[in-house]
Length: 149
Image 1 (cartoon, rainbow, N blue to C red):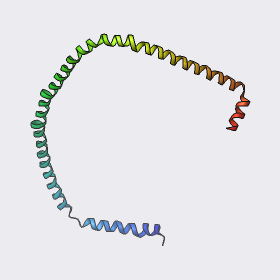
Image 2 (tube, one colour):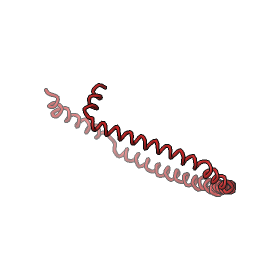
Image 3 (spheres, one colour):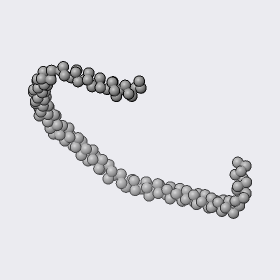
């Protein structure tokens, strides 16, 4: 007998019958009473846990948050203001020195170096254009050279 035929004609019907007999032996009323008891216990548990969480929020987290905002944040902001007050006169006093350094030393170096770099880049550009034009005009030579490589 092929497996498919056995499954449809005997296996599946027997499985359903066994399942039906097994489930008919269950005392569903007893399980219903137990589920109700579990529901009552869970409801009480949920209220207890929620009360505990609310107490923790109100007495611990709110107190820590208020203390942090009142003390740590204000202390940090005062430190930041003190640092700015400390740095401001130093920065103000340094402006003439930075201007002199830029105008007398850094800008001349940048101008000279930048000009040299631009001249070098322009030279490279011209050389590439010359080589590229020659290669375009002498395609047969370039092809034979690349074949050797």
